[in-house]
Length: 325
Image 1 (cartoon, helix red, strand yellow):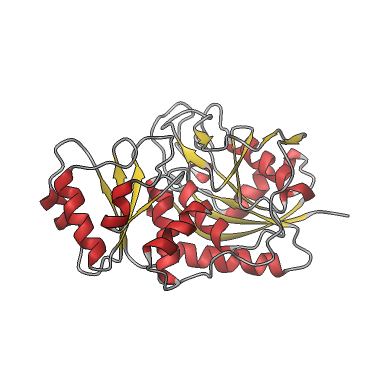
Image 2 (image 1 turned 135 degrees about the vertical axis):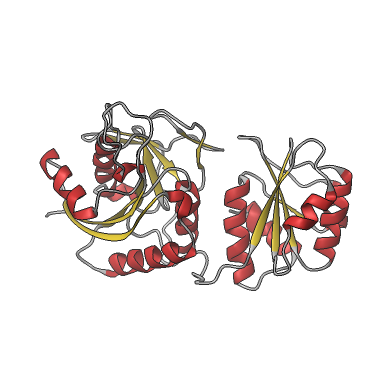
């Protein structure tokens, strides 16, 4: 029986063109999905692919409008009995945020695989074709279901909950935390590290077309409280602190954010460090803060937006959601 996969394209480097095989600069999102599927048609992939262009942009420009269209297209594809899974091509800069948002808002009954590239399509050593072939291998595997949304980069499979971009260049630009990769993949082989961990027939969170505004405050030496106040607009519903160390911040900044929490603005402490847990501190109860645990600031923002969109504002309930993310 032929495996049918739906490919939803959003642009990024995987669809980028430099115009010169050794150039450093390039234009993201230049190749359309039909052209791309024609290019991969000669790879001998063991799947029947159909494509749809959701966007064709640099992933730095990805936002709610594209997310809404992408989510609707994935839901539609997953409901098609003849569709075995979905592949999303995406730029790498915000790939982890899109993947995590989808992971929280989609069922886990069929594979959903997000894939990108670190080099444009006409560059020496273009990694996009191999990454895409690997993504097809994962999408065709029945054991990919029940693992949430997956990310395929550099011959590795990551859970959307763990994946993060850690390098600006090079094909091995992604890692996972707290779990590293959950499988190794090539175009012809796939080795999972462990069994699927869930069988979600429904999404964990309802989709929202209108995510509440949540800001990320980046902590640095000598950060002043006035700078934080200026950053927070009148309609801000939540704040994620990209703190130093284990989510730490200057005392005057802490005072300002504690007042924000008292005024009903959700405040989550995360860390600007690449790896490490942010646990609750004794002062968090008094300040009304939430600890991000293993989520980095950008993923903590996504989760907080979904929680607020669902009407959850109680710090204790927010903390339980972050603990069980």
